[in-house]
Amino acid sequence: MDIFNHSIILGSASPRRQQLLKDAGFSFKTVSINADESFSATLKAEQIPLYLAEKKASVYPEKLKDDEILITADTIVWVDNIVLNKPANDFEATQMLQFLSGKMHQVFTGVCITSNRKQVSFFDETKVYFKNLAAKEITHYIKNYKPFDKAGSYGAQDWLGLIAIEKIEGSYFNVMGLPTHKLYLQLNSF
View (tube, rainbow, N blue to C red):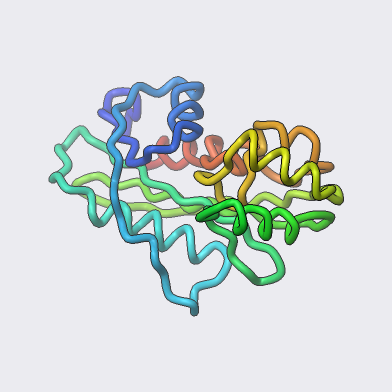
């Protein structure tokens, strides 16, 4: 399939995913998909974002045309066998960042590519190592950067990522919400 001759639809309101796909050279239109993001407690690690990415694809409201490809994705932070999604408020954001402080955590992004003929899902995993965070750093970050749209309450590309991340094993772009290298490979073989 020649992916550059297809209409790509990104089913995501995430400005980071939109920027990454644009930076990767793709033309696409963006559609916000309002899917229920609940999941079974039996799901673990990469199973969660894979399930949610597929769930988002399943509620896309239109029938895909022959030349259209829908991309949906979900990202979670996984630490000590606990999932950290997006915080609801300052208190949850503070708790999450205290929990991540001084630890290694995993970032999993699940991606689902859908056409009117087939569907392929995959995930990527990145290990992120945080320094110990001072309470004043956490407070400053939440107050000034309001990370309520970010899994684990932080963005690797903003202030906290710049001062807290000691080491990354795997794709940096996966931590931002879209493993562009794997997406490109999957689209080329789709």
